[in-house]
Length: 89
Image 1: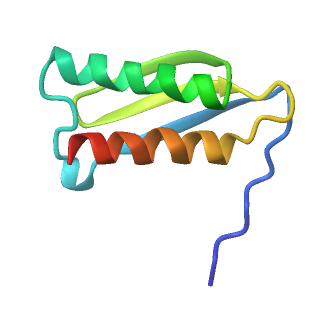
Image 2: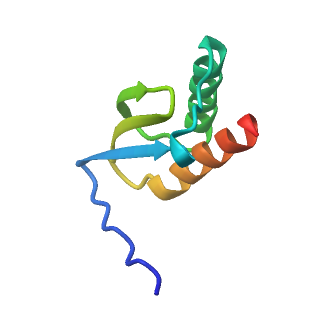
């Protein structure tokens, strides 16, 4: 049975977390972190979502974002994380 969609309301902060499978490393060297931040920048050019904080760990990452208006955060996250997975595989 599919999960019920989360209600996303403007003006609130949301925490995105993306973990690797089996605690595998996602970021191996400085260039990997830089490449991800470049993907964030490119995603922001298509779908702008204010990022308040980011923490990139070797096997996962955290992003705190704020929805201010009509941003489609699900599309934004899908675009960012799918592009990242394609980049590292």
